Length: 380
Ligand SMILES: *Cc1c(COP(=O)(O)O)cnc(C)c1O
Image (cartoon, rainbow, N blue to C red):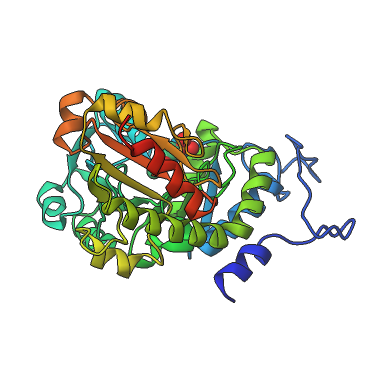
């Protein structure tokens, strides 16, 4: 079956008790056992719950995995994956990554005995040079954030596996509708379901998806031991979001590409970062790995931080907010908003300038979004 058929039918069985075509939201925290040996399918909702499980089944199928685990947020999912490491182990990661992941790795884990080495993962040679025997996890994000750099997932999987490490890929910006990193050799896929999977800016959630049942079992043990699980209402909303995911991200990607092309010709803009633009450094790999360019793009403004502030504060449709991937368009300045947790020198060193503006393109009409930006970018 095709992706969008599976998104609607796999894991989403009708309710046998009532015939309801949508599975019910099970809110129970505990489940009656037939006897004291705890052999029922469900016992306590931190360990597993039917509504969460239904979403996990759909997502695992869409990502080409054998098991998905749903978490209270993307960061809870990422943190759980890092619990596979012990003090003395090393993570090799990218420089163009989500600000919260940067904070977790460089501020929290680094202080707890885990070595964190950040390289430009869009250059496989840099990844190969960074991995060492103590590297246990290579963590990549493609497209990167906020510069939309493209990492060759297959090449990084080979490098990680040759070093005895796992490859994890934060696939929040692509979603399984645009790219399935497990098919390119990744061991773990992470999604912030808060973004395109939920898709309507009304929930927090995250997920890990794996293709090895043994690794899935280890991660489930860690998830149950630490407890950052997704609640039933969020699981229901995420399962509903998956049903329209492909339609939404393809339509949003088409608008994002038109805006990227329009911005590239705008006199106030010095550079546009969008993988579907011919001339983007990772364009060829993006074409191989992705079905469309995605809902996020960024661009550099010729002026200073003050000019960028004036621009993002004067749009009407693009709302001034972090987050991405939902039906409503958002605008932000990474330097002071989504990536404010980078030290200023580190931030500038990786290319996140003061005049960089990030857009999340929603489902509004292209013409309306273009006019909104045109107004905001015109001289005061
Ligand atoms: C939002 C986001 C995260 C973190 O997810 P939360 O749900 O906010 O915890 C991780 N990676 C990327 C790329 C994100 O956009």
